[in-house]
Image (cartoon, rainbow, N blue to C red; front, side):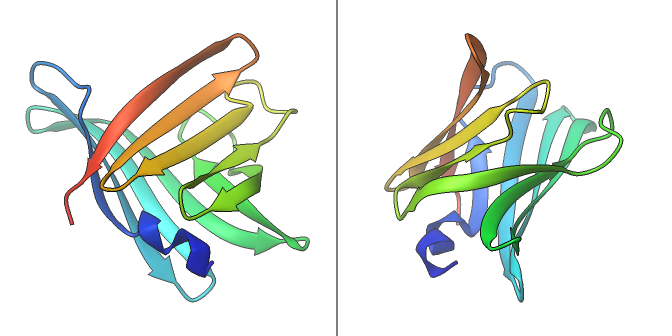
Amino acid sequence: MATLAWLEGTWERTDMSGEKKAFEIWKRTDDGFSGIGFTMRGQDTTFVEHLRIVAKDGHLHYVATVDHNPGPVYFRMRDISEKGFVAENPAHDFPKRIGYDRNGQTMTAVVSAGDQGFSVKFRKLE
């Protein structure tokens, strides 16, 4: 988990336009990391996802909980370093793969499933 210490803090999306803003906020916990991702339009919250990084079955997992899924979705993490990680769940509909790539105080998250996907860019606020 120490390798992922760079993740802790508040990250703001830099590729939003108009009144929209989005953030991910990560905190270290006793068993890993806990995070929340959310998007706002003005003062209204339009999307929320609860995130965790935890050990399960001898491996680290990136866990996402969103309203449109019946429960938490576990993505097994691999390629973990101080510059990022890749997490995969081939059985999930979308996404099947989530990758975080850090370069100093900026980060790119790539969310994909086969040939479909998108990337989002963040800068660290704190």
